[in-house]
Length: 146
Image (cartoon, rainbow, N blue to C red; front, side, top):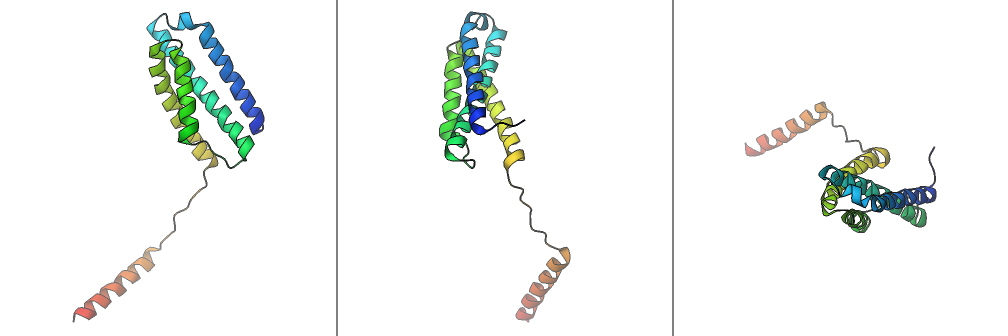
């Protein structure tokens, strides 16, 4: 069941705040081993997704339904905030957060394009008309030379 942009913004920002709090609560465990630092970066990328969704829906509810998040400043701002939050856990989490966030951004864009992009159809050119034009052009050039 879909919700409005303002409700989705509040939900996304609340989930992002919960992830940030969880990352800070389990900072020692996430920084303990190599595998956990990768998981910390993965959690940071989810923080990026929730933050981007919250910011985008907040702007959509404030500025109208046609408003879209752009690369700069919305995506860059959310990515920097997520990487900073991951950096508070461990410096390796910053790198893995960046990698996972770029992959998540690619798939978010792909989903948004399939859902919201208008369908563009290429004009159809009949092969018979194309041949007739080519013959006329050839005849004009050939008769002009003689």
